[in-house]
Image 1 (cartoon, rainbow, N blue to C red):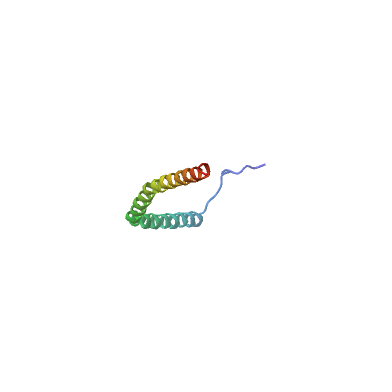
Image 2: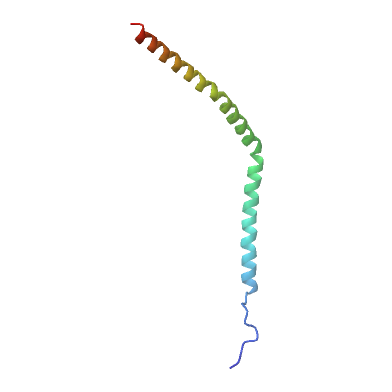
Length: 83
């Protein structure tokens, strides 16, 4: 029995080149996407600011609703017991 002198895996230079081109293309696509996101940074910050202001204004609506409900219940109770 003769044993092979090199039992490892052989990768041709054409296969290596193809893998390098594929990796290069993937990195280029990611770089393009990151550049697009970086240019939208100001717009994203504007959206964050607007959302924060809307969230801060939301609590008075809940308070007004609770107070109006309590006044309505009190008025109804007064009308019921006042008869």
